[in-house]
Length: 128
View 1: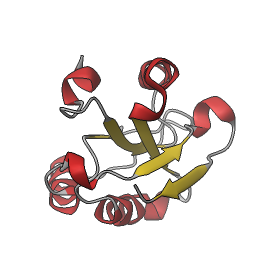
View 2 (view 1 turned 60 degrees about the vertical axis):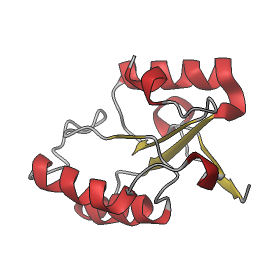
View 3 (view 1 turned 45 degrees about the vertical axis):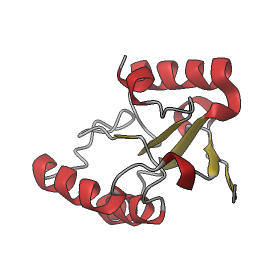
View 4 (view 1 turned 180 degrees about the vertical axis):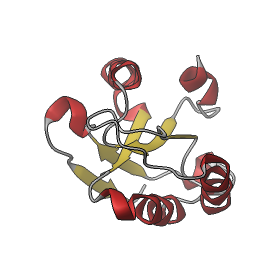
């Protein structure tokens, strides 16, 4: 429900997440990609090395400012059960500041397959 509600008026969805989200999220996002194809964009930030994850995630969020509808990141990694985010509220505020407001007209096509389902992350960027 969250993902379908977050779609832009033109039917596009852009999600920023980690590469180790829990199975239920991966299953749902992969199904949306399967059904909607290029209308769904998923950008996965690798968790490893965990010590720099928050900085790398925020950097990626800033790069995609105005192009993301949903930011989804787990407090704990799926693979290792390691805590990624020390202060979730502080991280959420930083991400909100980095991403800014979603602008459908600013969307570029960015594609990344979640590593937890493919074993590796592949990403390409096309200016639209």
